Length: 232
Image (tube, rainbow, N blue to C red; front, side, top):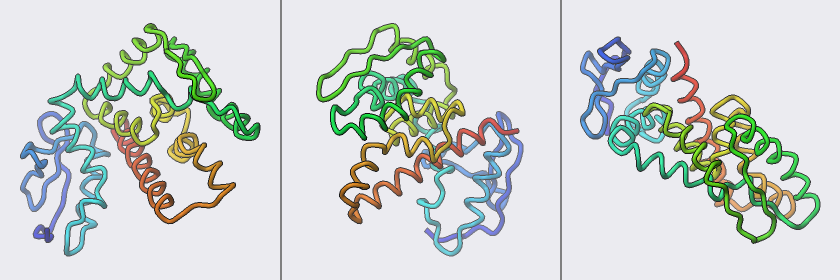
């Protein structure tokens, strides 16, 4: 799709902030008007569109994509999105530890242990930790507490949390980033701890490197989206 608009601007509208392309309201793929809660996020989305030259490249507009997802999908399928996000708690990455080698065990405990402790203190949600291939069942109380946190988010924050959880493979890591315990780089490092350990030992092929870059970009974009939602 070619760029046919000249000017991009944010503007106050009913319910929040919209973006105009040559004075025409921007719309989502489902034809809803794209309205976001904060001026800062609207400004960042407008900047994504203003940066397009010649051909419009949707892959370079992650904030636009997240906002459209919040409006077109999350708002209509909240219960499903909450369940999809909450399901990660039952088998959360940080609760499954290696039983060998000692260096990996130590690294997992150093990085993931404090996150498990924080989750217990912050949400009153103690999580069971296991090692090897032995599965562990989380208590209904812990799962219910974490589900309540997810369900309390508005559509835009829920979209960011859902995206972060999927990209990290961990609800605990996503919540830690969401609440400022980790930054995007730290969340990526925690989520990719096992993979990074293996790369240090055996190297990394091009396909794996590309996948890791994509995950890092997804985490950074969702973190920025959440931060902009909370900006004036």
